Image 1 (tube, rainbow, N blue to C red):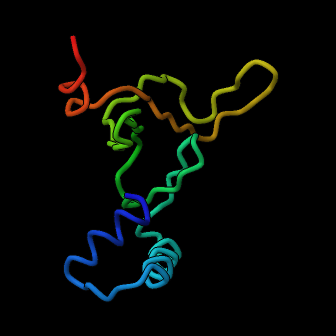
Image 2: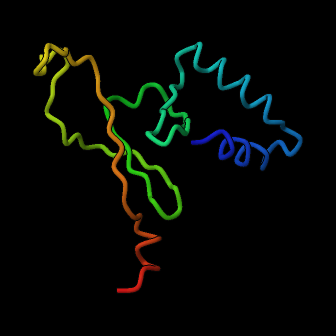
Length: 108
């Protein structure tokens, strides 16, 4: 979720909640390793539970929705040595396209 999505959702129960409180709480949850930051290639920061395990993301180019993908199309294990001497420590992948809701509104 983005900071704005978190704020919007939380304000349904706590209408007077401010964005500064959301940022402080996110920082505290990160320090406690309960959530982690996902930085999309666009530079946008999103936050998710830290215990989700290895997964990737899909972002809709029309509405901006970001969803988790349970599959990993890359078969590159940690510790792999790439050409040029680069050692893989981790990887993140974001796929882009159109979500089912937006695709439904696209003329065929």
